[in-house]
Length: 60
Image (cartoon, rainbow, N blue to C red; front, side, top):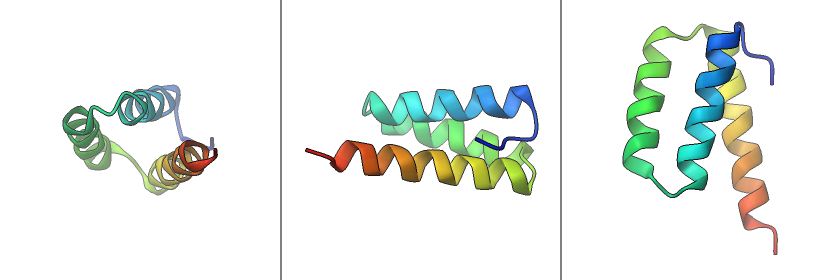
């Protein structure tokens, strides 16, 4: 994960945890908050983390 700061990295972990817990409302709120405050590197890191989580969730 290439987040720009420790705060962004922690926010990404929190979003992925919400998705993993199937708490999509919470994930949406966290993503919205993150997107307002993040820089491009942080957004790219969030995208990579969610893509990895989706790939992992689809594995048998």
